[in-house]
Image (cartoon, rainbow, N blue to C red):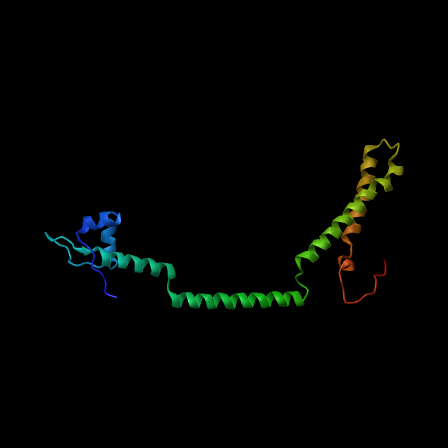
Length: 174
């Protein structure tokens, strides 16, 4: 396929044709824009609009695709990194260092239910002691002691008791 010749134009006509400024045309020339006649003192630049359009199209395509060999190397590097990360995650899962989100959600729901139940038991355990008490300091002391006991009990909560495990034996306190 033969390359079609475009209109022969000077620098300012080229700028008008492509809707750019004269400094942009100068940048294009510095970056390899094709020209028919080089301008100088008293000599106008002459450009072939079709050749310039092809050059702009090729530059845009090159910018869009990028350096294929560099991209291929980057793709390989990213693939190797992703594979290594996947293997590290599998290893962490085998070592029980990570858990599926669903399992964590179940455990958190269990813990929050336990916290709620234990905190809601505080009034029932303290009401008879506190009825008729007028000493605010003693009142707070009893409540704080009960709260501390509850928090200690929660801290000792066995989180593995509710998990699916390989052994089907129930825990001793169940």
